[in-house]
Length: 116
Image (cartoon, rainbow, N blue to C red; front, side, top):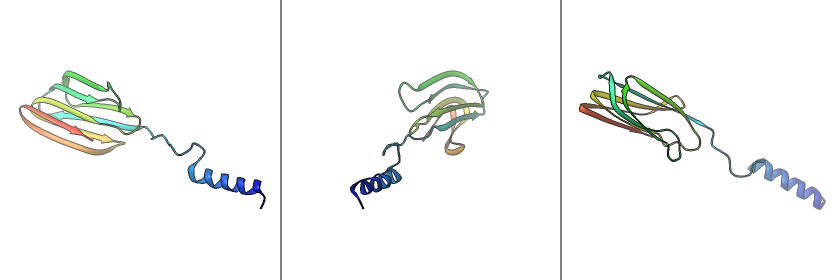
Protein backbone atom coordinates (compact mmCIF):
# COMPACT_ATOMS: atom_id res chain seq x y z
CA UNK A 1 0.00 0.00 0.00
CA UNK A 2 1.24 3.44 -0.84
CA UNK A 3 1.16 6.39 1.53
CA UNK A 4 -1.74 7.87 -0.44
CA UNK A 5 -3.75 4.62 -0.15
CA UNK A 6 -3.16 4.46 3.61
CA UNK A 7 -4.28 8.11 3.96
CA UNK A 8 -7.46 7.50 1.91
CA UNK A 9 -8.26 4.33 3.89
CA UNK A 10 -7.72 6.15 7.19
CA UNK A 11 -9.84 9.12 6.08
CA UNK A 12 -12.64 6.79 4.94
CA UNK A 13 -12.62 5.00 8.29
CA UNK A 14 -12.71 8.34 10.14
CA UNK A 15 -15.65 9.65 8.09
CA UNK A 16 -17.54 6.37 8.56
CA UNK A 17 -17.01 6.56 12.32
CA UNK A 18 -17.49 10.29 12.99
CA UNK A 19 -19.53 11.42 9.97
CA UNK A 20 -18.99 14.35 7.66
CA UNK A 21 -20.38 16.84 10.17
CA UNK A 22 -17.74 16.04 12.79
CA UNK A 23 -18.36 14.74 16.30
CA UNK A 24 -21.08 17.27 17.24
CA UNK A 25 -24.62 16.49 16.05
CA UNK A 26 -27.56 18.83 16.67
CA UNK A 27 -30.49 17.43 18.64
CA UNK A 28 -33.68 17.16 16.59
CA UNK A 29 -36.54 19.51 17.50
CA UNK A 30 -38.79 18.27 20.32
CA UNK A 31 -42.56 18.85 20.37
CA UNK A 32 -43.76 19.78 23.89
CA UNK A 33 -47.48 19.93 24.68
CA UNK A 34 -48.89 21.38 27.90
CA UNK A 35 -52.45 20.54 28.96
CA UNK A 36 -54.56 21.93 31.78
CA UNK A 37 -58.01 20.80 32.91
CA UNK A 38 -60.02 21.41 36.03
CA UNK A 39 -63.34 21.65 37.79
CA UNK A 40 -63.49 25.45 37.42
CA UNK A 41 -64.21 27.14 34.08
CA UNK A 42 -61.00 29.21 34.34
CA UNK A 43 -57.49 28.94 35.76
CA UNK A 44 -56.61 31.99 37.86
CA UNK A 45 -53.12 31.97 36.35
CA UNK A 46 -50.76 29.72 34.42
CA UNK A 47 -47.01 29.99 33.92
CA UNK A 48 -44.99 27.86 31.51
CA UNK A 49 -41.63 27.53 29.78
CA UNK A 50 -41.81 28.06 26.00
CA UNK A 51 -38.28 27.18 24.92
CA UNK A 52 -34.98 25.88 26.24
CA UNK A 53 -33.46 29.35 26.60
CA UNK A 54 -34.19 32.59 28.39
CA UNK A 55 -36.55 34.45 28.57
CA UNK A 56 -38.86 31.56 27.70
CA UNK A 57 -41.31 31.97 30.62
CA UNK A 58 -44.89 32.97 29.76
CA UNK A 59 -47.54 33.96 32.31
CA UNK A 60 -51.27 34.26 31.63
CA UNK A 61 -54.26 35.11 33.82
CA UNK A 62 -57.92 34.05 33.70
CA UNK A 63 -57.33 31.21 31.21
CA UNK A 64 -60.37 29.20 30.01
CA UNK A 65 -60.16 25.47 30.85
CA UNK A 66 -59.41 23.07 29.32
CA UNK A 67 -56.29 24.67 27.83
CA UNK A 68 -53.57 23.26 25.53
CA UNK A 69 -50.32 24.83 24.33
CA UNK A 70 -47.85 23.29 21.87
CA UNK A 71 -44.25 24.39 21.38
CA UNK A 72 -41.18 23.23 19.49
CA UNK A 73 -38.04 23.08 21.60
CA UNK A 74 -34.52 22.91 20.14
CA UNK A 75 -31.97 20.94 22.15
CA UNK A 76 -32.82 19.49 25.55
CA UNK A 77 -36.20 20.92 26.56
CA UNK A 78 -36.86 22.31 30.01
CA UNK A 79 -40.61 21.82 30.21
CA UNK A 80 -42.37 23.35 33.23
CA UNK A 81 -45.95 24.46 33.78
CA UNK A 82 -47.69 25.67 36.93
CA UNK A 83 -51.30 26.70 37.43
CA UNK A 84 -53.74 27.86 40.08
CA UNK A 85 -57.51 27.49 40.11
CA UNK A 86 -60.46 27.03 42.43
CA UNK A 87 -61.50 23.41 43.01
CA UNK A 88 -59.22 20.92 41.27
CA UNK A 89 -56.71 21.43 38.46
CA UNK A 90 -54.58 18.95 36.51
CA UNK A 91 -51.48 19.69 34.46
CA UNK A 92 -49.97 17.31 31.91
CA UNK A 93 -46.75 17.50 29.87
CA UNK A 94 -46.34 15.47 26.70
CA UNK A 95 -42.99 15.24 24.89
CA UNK A 96 -43.28 14.07 21.29
CA UNK A 97 -46.78 12.80 22.07
CA UNK A 98 -45.90 10.79 25.19
CA UNK A 99 -47.03 11.78 28.70
CA UNK A 100 -43.92 12.51 30.81
CA UNK A 101 -45.58 14.16 33.83
CA UNK A 102 -49.05 14.71 35.24
CA UNK A 103 -50.19 16.20 38.55
CA UNK A 104 -53.50 17.14 40.13
CA UNK A 105 -54.17 19.51 43.01
CA UNK A 106 -57.32 20.23 45.00
CA UNK A 107 -58.08 23.17 47.24
CA UNK A 108 -59.13 26.75 47.51
CA UNK A 109 -57.02 27.64 45.64
CA UNK A 110 -55.53 24.54 44.07
CA UNK A 111 -51.92 24.90 42.83
CA UNK A 112 -50.26 22.35 40.61
CA UNK A 113 -46.83 22.03 38.94
CA UNK A 114 -45.55 19.67 36.25
CA UNK A 115 -41.97 19.48 35.02
CA UNK A 116 -39.81 17.32 32.85
